[in-house]
Length: 395
Image 1: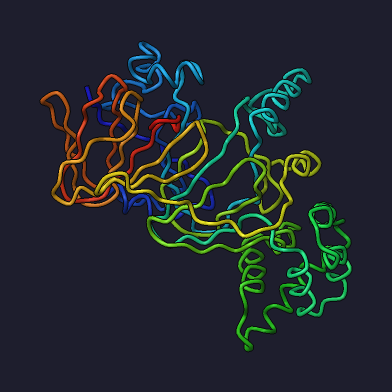
Image 2: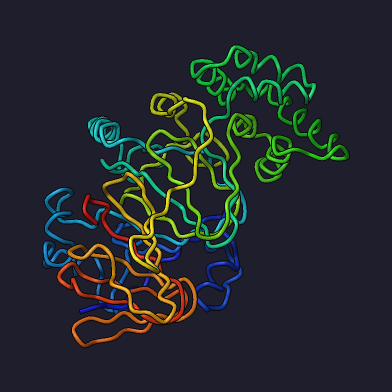
C-alpha cells in the first residue's frame, strides 16, 4: 500500500518564514521554518497517514518495506533522509565525516562519557552524512576552497594589512597553506578580531566600484554574524550560484554553507555536523581540521541522466541515497528504484501515483512513501515530483 507521508518542520533560526509554508500551502507562523524532514531520523520522524510513525512501519517488516538489498547493506533502517530546505540567511560553516571517521569519533565520545544529546557532542551517530541539494529556487552557497593564490590576491585588493598578514601563507599556494590559514582564522583571539570589521569596511568602501563576489560574501555573512571569525574563513571558499533543478553534491570532508535559497535535499540518515563558525553551536576547530579536505577547486554541478523520457537521475556517488526528478507531462512513468522503499514528493502541479489498482493524488508539497514490495508503481499527471531512495548500484 502507498501511504501519504507527513514530515516534520524544523524551526532553525536561519530559515525562511515564508518559503516552506508557500510550498506546503499552509499559513506562515511568523517564525522561521528552515527544513521539512521526510524520513525516520529520531530528531524529526515522519508519519504515515497522520496515525503511524514511518520508523515503526518499517521496523515491522524491514525487507518488505525498505528492501532486501539496502537492509543487507545498511541494516533495518531507512539509509537516507529527504528534506526541503529554505534558507533566508547563511547557515554555519560545516562539514560531515566519512563512515570511518564517524565510527571512530562516535566510539571515542561514547567512551569519554559524553551524552549523545550534549551540546559539546560532535558525533551524534556513527554514520557519514554526504548530501546533495537540488534547487527549487535559485541557491547561493559556499562550497570547498578557492585556489589559495587567487584568494591571496583578493585579500590584497582590500588593502587591509592585518588581514593580509593572517593569510600570507596563501601566496605560496597548496592545501597545507589553506589548512594553516583556516585554523589561524578560526582561532583568532578576541583582541585581534577588529580585523574582521576592517575587512568588511574595506569591502563596503569598494561598493561604488562594483562589489565583487568576494566583497559581497564578506558583507553578507558579517551582516548576520558580526565579529565572527567564520566571516574571514568564509572568504577562503568558492561561492556557487545555481538555478532550479540543478544540484550540487557535498562529499565527506567538504566545507560548505548554504547562504540562501530553497531546494530538495537528500542525505545519508545522519546528524553528524562539525561546525567551523557562523553559529552559536559547539565548534571543535581541531577535529574539524582533521577531517576537512583542503584540496582547492570549484565543485561542479551533479550530472543528470535521462534514462527514459521524463525521468531524470541525479548521478551522485553516495550508496546511502539516490535522487530522481519525474516530469510526466501527461504520460505515465514507472517509479524508479523498484525493490526499495522510496519517498515521493510533489514539487509542482498535481501528480498521481498508482499501484495494484489503487491511486493516490498529491499536490505541491504533499508526499508519500512507497514500500519496496510495491515494484510496479507508476506516476502520471502534470507536474514535477522528486523520488528519494537508496543509491545502491543498479537503481
